[in-house]
Amino acid sequence: MTAPELPEALRPLTPAGERLVAAASELFYDRGIHAVGVDLIAEVAETTKKTLYDRFGSKEGLVVLYLQRRQHRWREFVSRHLDEMSVDRRPPWGPLGVLDALELWMAEQSRGCAFVNAYAELGGSDHPGVEVIRSEKQWTQRLYRRLCEEDGLPEPEQLAAAVHLVHEGVLVLATAGAQPDAFAHGRRTVEQLLAAAAGQDR
Amino acid sequence: MTAPELPEALRPLTPAGERLVAAASELFYDRGIHAVGVDLIAEVAETTKKTLYDRFGSKEGLVVLYLQRRQHRWREFVSRHLDEMSVDRRPPWGPLGVLDALELWMAEQSRGCAFVNAYAELGGSDHPGVEVIRSEKQWTQRLYRRLCEEDGLPEPEQLAAAVHLVHEGVLVLATAGAQPDAFAHGRRTVEQLLAAAAGQDR
DNA sequence: ATATAACCATACCGGTCTGTATACTTGCAG
DNA sequence: CTGCAAGTATACAGACCGGTATGGTTATAT
Image (cartoon, rainbow over all chains, first blue to last red; front, side, top):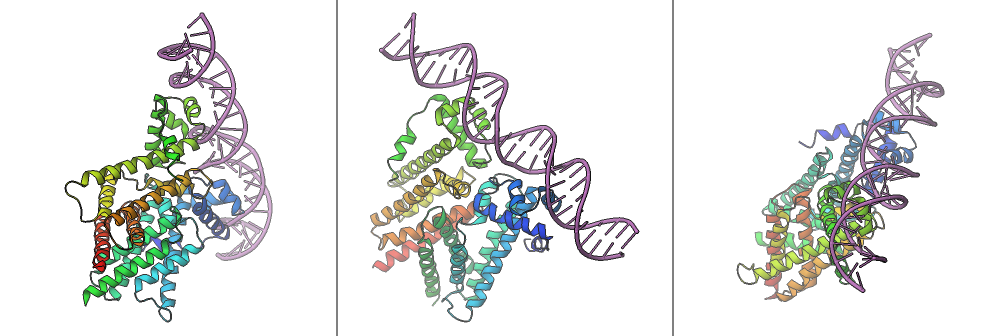
């Protein structure tokens, strides 16, 4: 359901098109979607509104592409992080690797989860971006389930759901809650959940 | 820090003023802050923009009042719920009562956490509403800590942080993630965390 | 050679945004 | 009686919104 739509979103764009998505991505993430106008996007991208509408048809189309590309970047980031960790400094359980990746990912981004933020603005409408947001959360939860299964943990479905709840909570409290120790609390909590699950299996 | 600002926010307003905050609260929550204009607010409140600016000075002032009043409503709601539960059908631990209250609270509100949503729109600016958002998260965390202490659970600070992470995760995944079973997963997870903490103490 | 894609520059459209100005009505308290 | 707070109605200002129109330039590919 979610897979076939990403390749289309990742097709190479023209140079000006790439500058536009880059500018829009940064502006949307930092200031919000409704707060950023197409005139500003074109100006920051050093091109014109004409080119923006030639490439993307509407602001809505640009928003969808922003979300799709960000989703792809997150998937690549966490996948690469998990692969690199498989050699050295591997945490005792796979799901912890995702949480470590999340902390690294958020170190450069101070506005929290782009999908949660986008949902705050689009959730009450029928904007096509809502579907992308929903699929991002599904993907992350499936990733946790896969990692729980690979570690041979019991009830991987339930465990993945629990870990994912903590994951999202960390994002919220580290940003909107202004609690920088949310990552430490989250890791500790997930360690405890995983240890309890692994222990109960013995 | 957070306490002295609420009484000011709860001072009684003129009839037209009350209609304005009521209309603004519903519109801001359902559609987002930037997406709702002052003209619409005045129209829904069956008054005029003139009255809006006479009462609140600016849209920003109305936004702050919206957040402060919603914070107060949430505090009242959860406090009353905890009190009512103290007689019958009390869950095994206090923190679970907050989670139950959250589920009831969210049953009528489909747009998730108003403070997380507001932060998505205001977080990148110096809007005075950001302070209210931050204080709401602090209050909820302190509530969890108090309840953990009252139940005599070990390491109440750490435990409250963990439960609060799950709490916020539930809100996110039940709305942006479109996972209606997030409440069930969250309750299960919190039960597990509390049981583990209580058990380790023996 | 010529068609086409990509791009730039600029002006414009109708509508909406926050906020202000003007002028009038109502009810109440000194 | 008078002053004042509260409210209504309406018009306006200046900026910005998403989106379109016109016209010209450059590079490349057939």
